[in-house]
Image 1 (cartoon, rainbow, N blue to C red):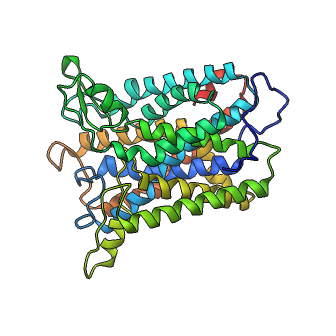
Image 2 (tube, rainbow, N blue to C red; image 1 turned 45 degrees about the vertical axis):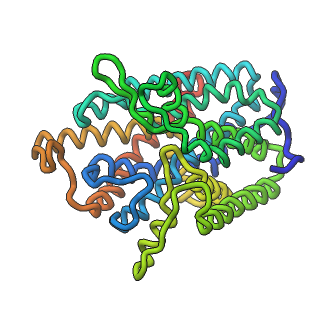
Image 3 (cartoon, rainbow, N blue to C red; image 1 turned 135 degrees about the vertical axis):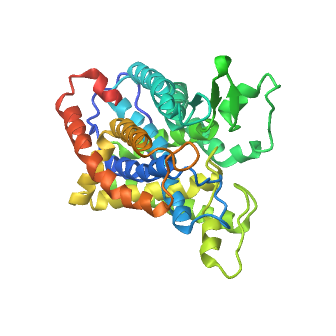
Length: 395
């Protein structure tokens, strides 16, 4: 990132006039929300088809293999945009106010994950499980960012890049449940199951170390979105960053030397070879998982700014203007639909009700987008209209 980029504002600086939201940021956030719905439809209606991490390209349904790559962009971009959004928030707030916001929002996200989102799946999984997933990871990362943002800019860049590029060196470190450090290590890096009292378990689906790097780099990149920063320079930076990350991905993936499990060629089947090439480890996200997804996000920011005045960008941005509302709404609606179908027609796959073909997931996808669009529009407009309601900013 260029040394000429403006430094983080000092505490108490209030004379910076910055937009609360930029259309291309909301559009990118909305884009990943739309993609996320596709993955959660699969998790609701097609979970009987086991998806390995990374996907087994030799057996996966090709449509699901490519869809899985598409939805891989969701978490990295959303976490990076969270860091960027915090930087923009800090432009018009003191360090103390920004810290307070991060701690409150982070704690709220953790509570939502544990108290609301996890119980949505109880009765479907064999035992009550606290799923420490993306909302948990964002909450923990925001709390950590409250301290990390105080680092000098070069130190924060070094920390973010270190987490992004070198965390795969920790892959061989595996602890068993008998080790006293196991619960902490499972939360930090080792995707695993932690036994809890009263028969509960916690599944650390989103170990947080790589995400700390992503949110830190998103915060650093926020300097490019200051009102006084030249738009041409910002877009040039994003293009260099985006194409550079994608090029690094292609090089490292081709060499098969670092950053993820090796890919393989399938003789006589180029489709499965391509799927293998683009199938990376998500839990925790490998370097090769993060490079193309974050790089693609940088390129999309430029694209959405170039076509900002189109109706398409405005429609997509609606989902990004109320992301937490959309996230909670679509998961709740999917749970209601699932339990309704199970109650009406009964189980058709063991104790569950599932689609027998992935094409049904794809067919329901545009229908759900239309259904969920209208309440999301209502809530996004409410947030813009009622800025006097403090708690709305947390959703």
